[in-house]
Image (cartoon, rainbow, N blue to C red):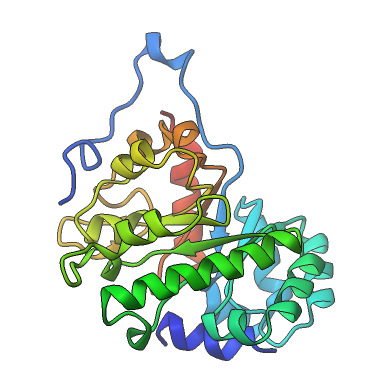
Length: 282
């Protein structure tokens, strides 16, 4: 099931040499200054097949794998109160949730109420349907709409953000949509959740965005790709996450959500990715 369809059904109830450089182990002289990730999160879309079977057991499994944060993509027919209670039982926090555009448009008040119950600090728009992004004017209208949504979210005490795929890096009428969104969206009202995999697939360098738009990216999706371009578990591909995370302060990065869109074995996938990230230093 594609993400856009999944969210719609569940919310309602160029690759740079530096980024793809071989991963290096710090020398003895470097280790004193080396950093590692603090809290590691998981985008629950990765384990959606398990969530559909048993939300509580899946959240326990995620916590048992070592994750401390999760990002929701729908509540799987649970009420916000039920979700919050299960999070507390599992010892997890959910700083973010992906919300389909139609829900942001039509039921924003209810979405915000649910976010406050569950504990979301960020509401993230994860996808734009093709009908909403045919022309550069479409992207301008969407940017203006996101500013409006972001302003309403801020008034309600949550932060709005946008999650990219690769289509935002394909030229439309002489403009690159992602650059247009960054320029037209109010940086305070619309933060960005940078999907590292899709950004690289789109031929762009995450570090370029961090430098040009500092503190704009409080969240990211951590997903890896092999030399053929296929999505793989984190640490089993070619992306140099150390080089990216070394610029976390510049980017404003505070939340790192592992994701794999279609893992053959979701449980093993999240464990593999977490093991790699706990060993990563930068």
